[in-house]
Image 1 (tube, rainbow, N blue to C red):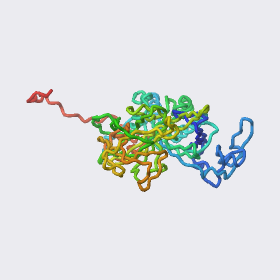
Image 2 (tube, rainbow, N blue to C red):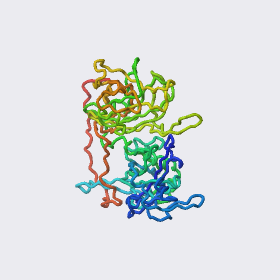
Image 3 (cartoon, one colour):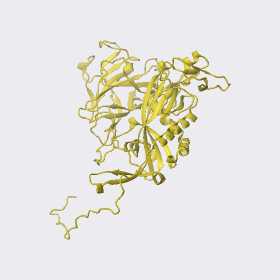
Length: 537
């Protein structure tokens, strides 16, 4: 079974990515397993609704895969649309992918009472087989009920919308440790009275980008996660009505797979000597310089583990509102100066400067801002902050941090970001970059100061818009050993060890009538000798 999901991005977005029908639109259809995998997969058909072909081609609002006008909506005034083949929508679409975990929370006692099964671990000696009581996983019928419920719930919230996606279930486990580690505390998944069925799902979505709308895989996940959050009560109620398997459901929520913290371990590990959440920051230069932006590199030391960056701070001498953008890419920036399309926009927003001695935080949920021009107020989309990783064992990630020209100083010049002059005066104007700051997990290097926005190309190193080398005055919030307990893991994403097989619905052999007892040795009658020396205190 497949969930087909349509998204129409628009200029407006909310700060919490809540699913407001006038902002982000979804339309869902239900297809059988024998139907085509994606709507309009055959671009020769490319069928969409409209009052005429031009409207169908321009807006691509509603697909009509059957080719029938009956698939098309009717306006409140009663005006009907027609289905146009070859509407020209398919070739303009881009694809998004998101994989995450939908956690279905049950009342443990009630669910186990009705859906208890026994798993058997076989050994060479049959009498030593291990049997364990657990809850049953969903079968095909229950999976179908879950998918249909998600479809109907989201349709109620976001009907009459556009663009394509498909959802399928990958696997399912009870109380997956790495999911519990990142789940919101309000769910209290450690409560023994609760049981969580963690269902991994993958969504594939397609949409038509424009100059004003450009979405990422993360945006798709945020839409899905927010939808479940907004429809919490409705979804729980509909699940209970859909199949008896869900009678004991108390809640449902989702997290992105990229946020899963670690693989479960069967062996206990030592407590860390430092907290996993760390801050890496440079010293605030008492005599800094600055300009529109700076490009620089951050690395992990040789032999060090991968690191996840979860926040950033910078400094500006300006004390008013400014607009910032942060671009990033894995690897070096040296041959990519001015080539913004080679970087990913990982952060953007509006913030108020606090002067040359105080850090300015990039706001995680800074997804929408306003700009006032005379009597007109305009809303602007932003990214906020997207968590990113740096590979271990000498991995490198480049950053381009800049202010824009949307807001300017009183003299109509650009708002600067502060950075330090060259650490070695002999390297001024040369492409020689030293290490600014380091600790056991990260190494920060000098880069180039940039005097204009957007940054110009500099193929021969002689552009007048660059000053080099310059030291970033920057701070990062990061997670050390994000793949704990695999503390030395240098790749990404973090590994997860899955079960080798599902539990059997019935025991593979009948239990023995009486348990087999292996007596332990009798204790000695005499106590052990006293220690020869007193223990140290």
